[in-house]
Image 1 (cartoon, rainbow, N blue to C red):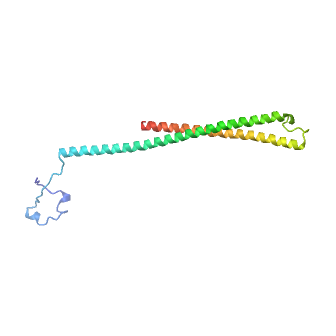
Image 2: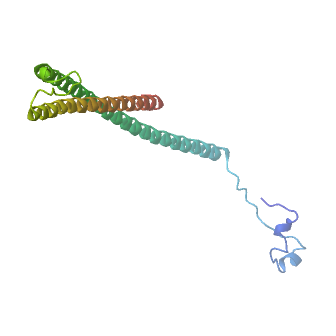
Length: 185
């Protein structure tokens, strides 16, 4: 296409040196202008391929998110299972501690029943026993009391650990459920 007209200002003689061409052709410059616009078919196919690329990128991003959520869900499930196992261990320790408490209390009661005649109403050995026997009775009584107190303290610690384990299990169970909801599993 040949177009006649003035050369726009940014592209005129101040920008380019046309030399003698302008004067020899009466101040006109001949040029060929090519239409660089894209045809309808080409534009349509480019739009379709662009849309397809965007859709593929979106699908890849979604797949990446699904993988991340799946790994989070697996990790949450593992943590939940570990917490349940810890809770079971704490429950077993508590049961053992309760047995130890009962055993210590029954041993102390058996000791008191067997040697009750040698103790006064204040729980101290009677004065009629020899000094050596009083010491042995006091030591044995102290040992049984100490064993019972230790067993009670261990039971308290086991109860506390079990409570913490149950709380942790519940938290991790909630996290696992939320992760499953997020992944749609």
